[in-house]
Length: 124
Image (cartoon, rainbow, N blue to C red; front, top):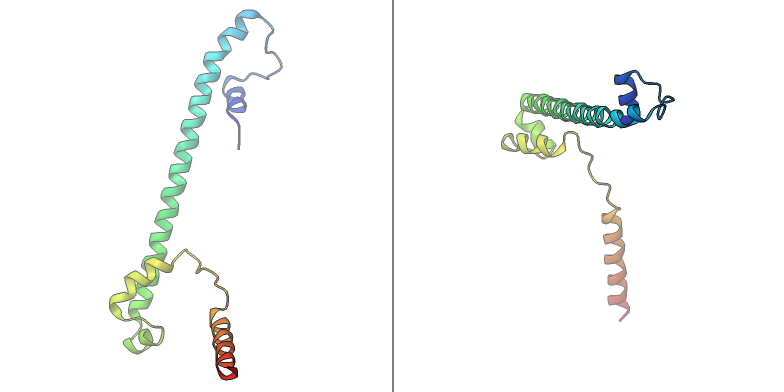
């Protein structure tokens, strides 16, 4: 990514080596540098906004495609994956583009704890 000063050099055609060659030139460059910095930040902000907009549009299209695919399944297949027709929209909105959190293996840990407490109960 270019810095505002590099953008200034690009816009003005300056080389960066001729700074301070005369007192008048050093004083007049500040306004141009400030303007080019403002233009740089404006263009950067517009680029970020477009990037977010395109990303949101892509997510929306992916969610729509997933909902369409799930809606084509029959009720038996939906029940197999734990959904009914009314939950398709919520399921798609909550899962597309996001990874499920990785949880520790709670079931084996809970089973081991239950077995341990059962052994302690029998031993007492």
